[in-house]
Image (cartoon, rainbow, N blue to C red; front, side):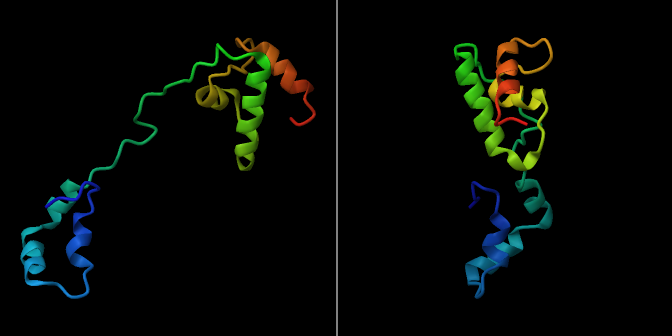
Length: 112
């Protein structure tokens, strides 16, 4: 009986008192079947990048979103514009579509 999370190896090896059915199951499971049963889930690097659409938002809403994003990522330090664009869909790069938001952020005393 397979576990949907791929932790079949935990069922038998980590029991304190194995029952007769558990010993029969442990002999049927080989190391190769455990290795093939476990597959890594799709990581963020393998998934295609989906950039959110922020075109319907006003410049003030975009500024508030950027400030909230930066507040939640304080420990990351200075984040480059491509990181913000991938997360929020707001283009803060030089000559980007959201140049008004860039000037608003530069004039904002909360942003260093």
